[in-house]
Image (cartoon, rainbow over all chains, first blue to last red; front, side):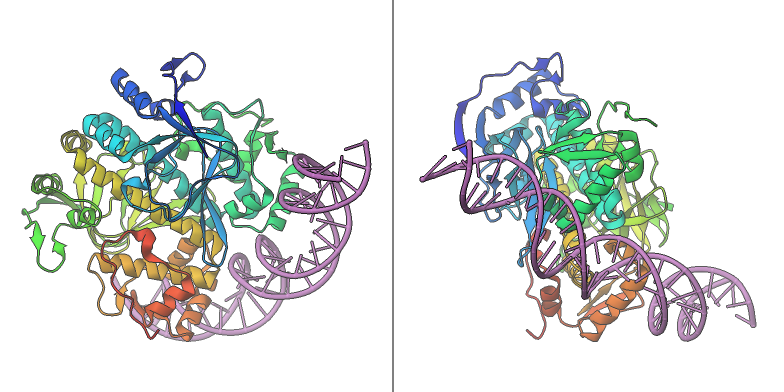
Length: 262
Length: 262
DNA sequence: CGATCGTTTGAGTTTGATCAAATGTGGTGG
DNA sequence: CCACCACATTTGATCAAACTCAAACGATCG
C-alpha cells in the first residue's frame, strides 16, 4: 500500500460514462445528486491510496481509521473460519465502499483484499459525519447504496443455498458481467475476472476440483471461456437462462439488452 | 392483515428491557438517541397493522406503500426461483425493518411472511423523508441498523457456503438464540422457533429429510431439542463450539455469558 | 372420522468432496 | 536462453455427504 498526494479535481461530468467519478456514477444509478453534493463527494475523496494485486486493503481485527471507497481496480471481501475455510462474500468494483461498517464497528470483522492493482479514496469518519450532517439527500443516497450491496449479498445466499454448481457458477458470471458493464469495464463479450479457480471455489462454496469440471462443462456448452483473468461470455442470454438469472436485484438503471443467439 | 387504530404512546423507558419500543431498543444497541429522536420514532410508528401466522406481510411484486417495522411477532424474508425452489434469507424479530428497500426500489423483489401472529408499524415514505431530513443522527442510526442486517446476511453466506449441515444448523440456532435473547424473547434455555423442518431446510439449503436426520444428531448429542415450535438449547457453549460460532457479527451491545457445562 | 400437514424411516442415487498425481505456465536468476 | 520454482489447472479414482423417492407414522382440525 502506498499513499499518494492530492488527486486533481476531476471533471464532474464525462461524455462517455455519464459521470467520471465512480461514486457519483454509482449513486446516480438510483439517486439524484445536486451540484453541491457532487462537489462535496469529490472534495471528500481527494486523498487516495494504492494497493498492489494481492495486498490486503483491510484486515480482520484492524482498527478502522476511515472508509475506503474503491476508485479503480478489483477487490474482494472475505471471511476465514478458525479452521482455515475461506468464504468470499463480495466483489468490489469501482464506486463500491470497502468497509462502510466504520459506522457500526470499531474493528473489522472480515477482510478485504485487492485482486488487481487498485486505488481507493480514504474518507475519514469525521468527514463522513460532516457530510451526513450537512446533506440528508446525499446520506440517503449512500444508505441506498448499502441497501443495494445487501440485495446482492441476499442473492448470493439464494445462489449458494439453492442453485446447483453449474447454475451457480453461471449466475456469478452473469452478475459480474452486468456489474462490470455498469462501470464500463467490459470489452465486447469479455470482462476482467482476476480469480483463480480456488478463489472461485471459495466464492461459490465448491471445491477447486469441482470448479474446474464445472467450468469445463460451461465451456463445452459454449457459454463461457475463462483464460488469463479474462472471462468471455459467448452467449449471455443462454448463460442467464442456465443460471436462472434475472438482473433486477442489481438495480442498475439502464438495463442493456442481453446478446446471444436466442 | 388487519388495520388497527392509533397506538397509545408507550413509555420510552422500561425497567426490564431498557427501552419499551423495539426500534429504540434496537438502535440503542449501537447508537445514542436524543429524547427528541425517540419521540419522533414513537410518533412515526403509531399506525400499526397486524398479521396472522402464515400471512404474507409483503409479496414479491407489491408496490411499496411504506416501510414495515416489526413490533411484535416473528417473520421471515424469502425468495422463490422460477422453478419453485425457495430460499429463506432472514428472520425478522421485533425492532427489525421488513422492507427498508423502499428507498431503493418501487416494487418488492422478494417476499416477507409472518411465522407467528405479528404486529408491524407502517411508516410512510413521506414520513421517512421527513425524519431523515430533520435528524441526521437518527438517519445514521437507521443506516447502521441496515449495515447490521447485512452483516448477518454475510454470515449466512459463510454458513451456507462453508459449514457442513451439522455445523450449519447449530450455527443458525446459536444466532437465533442470541438475537432472541437481545429482544427478551427467551425463557430459560428455550426460545420460540416457529419453523417446520421444510422451512428449516429452505433456510439452510438442505432437504427436509436431511434436516430431520441432522436434527436427530444434534438431539442425540444432547445439544438441542426442537418440539412444538420451541427450541431448547441444553448446552449453548458446546453448540457454539460445534457451530464454529462467534457472536461478534451480531454486534449486540452487552454480550451475556454463554451457559453450558464447558 | 377422514383429511391434511408435518415428521420419521428406509433404500438407492447423485452430487460434489477428497486425495493424489500429472501437466501447464509464468516468473526469476544463473 | 534455459533450468528451476512456485502456482494454477487438469485428470483420475475413490468416498462421503446430502438428495430423491416412497411409504409409514403422528398430530391436529373441522
